[in-house]
Image (cartoon, rainbow, N blue to C red; front, side):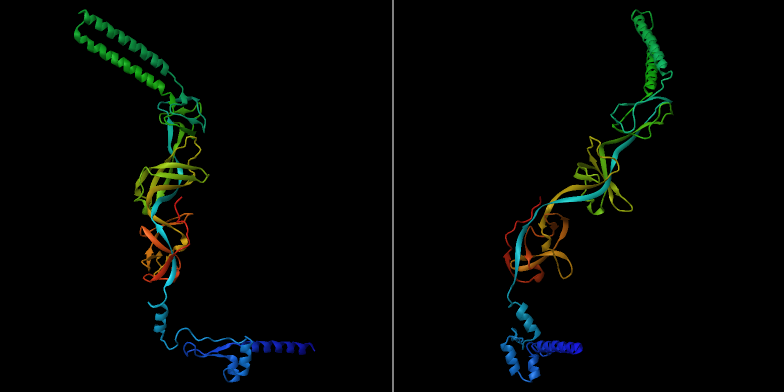
Length: 407
């Protein structure tokens, strides 16, 4: 009983499907437009507009066949001419006028921060370290005392030189008095003048040697290793302390070969570090020699760092403001490709489509900055994919929108 029910249900499905197919159309190709199309029910009946076909047609279940709008007797070339030729209706497009604006030219650079200089304060005379006046990480100014060496006999040498100078000065004064009274020959002045000069030089040398026991900072910055320890023996050239000059600090990056012609010193730049700091600076150096591996040129941007917040060696990105040039700010949607795959935009000039290859300079939130267009261009914003260069079109202004402007 269950099998009989299943077979019966399947038969009903087949019957329904057959009736549905009978309302369709049999198409025999190769006979031209409008030919070879015949209702399946007419094929079954053996004649057109049979009783079954009429009944299905009156019920609205039979597919209707309409005569083609194009004369089937025309050739393919004649049909193409009728639909796309000069006699065909013009393709409608929408346009928007874009005018050239000052386009900012910015070159991005990736690099890192570097100290302006790393200076080692060294001893200029031999001696043991008596006192170290600074600690690692301490800020120092020019002239701050870093280390003091044991003076030894240097103070005594200064005192002895002062006494010798006083004696030479007394002899010089006495000789002048005697020559004024005629008691000493005139040529005796040379000897006392030489003796006085020697005594003065001796004092200067002794004082300089004593001053060398105090090692002072020649630049401002932060004290870093290596740093001498009290009691250590220093020879001439031995380091007392290392000073990292962080104000100003320098950003170093590589300028690509394609942009080196635009680079010059004095340009403004914005620098953002990986630590989230944003600062302004100026380009102070551009190398004249390219890197052998990358063919890029080293550039340095000097940054004020009064609070020493920016550290040496931090990864950063700089945007160098090269200046401005005429360009157009367009929405991305108007860009298209020609038959050769060239990127550009289609415009309308005197109701004729023109194609302009463009160069994308930068991509911003307001749109894309491009070059390659006339000063003023009626760019196709709707329908640019349906027309080709040289085609006559019916252009109408797009819905009123505000032309993108640089912020």
